Image 1 (cartoon, rainbow, N blue to C red):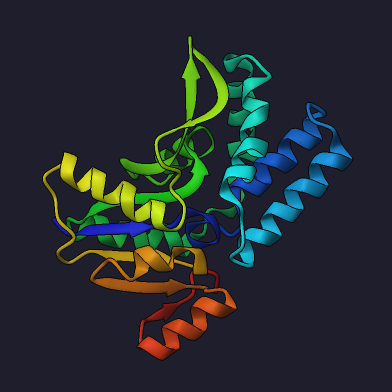
Image 2 (image 1 turned 90 degrees about the horizontal axis):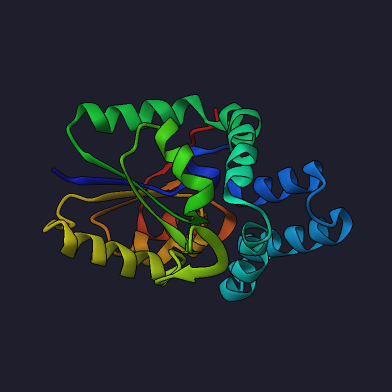
Length: 218
């Protein structure tokens, strides 16, 4: 069955779950609001501009996971998904996912956002396979570190190839939907790249190469 692969943030979602999780922590009062917001916004701007230092960002974004009990984090996450994510799950994105499901395709989300944040979002879309940056657990607690390669830029290709090897699968007939120039390596890897509400740089490349450009927001 061909792979139908979806980026998450600003593709299936009308916003960025990583950034919004930071906003959620600020509103809960569990991080220093002014300082955290400034850094959160800078990292988000760097990501959009294609210059994100992924290691620095992960040290920042995973630190709160290491500072609170896992059960408390999961309670905060449930509220986060209900109040901040479900309202930005795009109806057209649901329809696109269901179209591929009805075609019998294998559905997958690949996202740089960590799996603690994104696993319940993938479940909301009914997508079984998730490749995300993996936060490390030590004795049942998040350490603030990662396991394996972050699923960012070329790391998405590396992680996908590991998944393909583990599942004896191939990229034959594969399609990938993304909004971001950061996903160019994976868009160039699949058989059918599709730009979804693309940023300016990805839109220019898609036009140049004749890739389809679609919107899930209209």
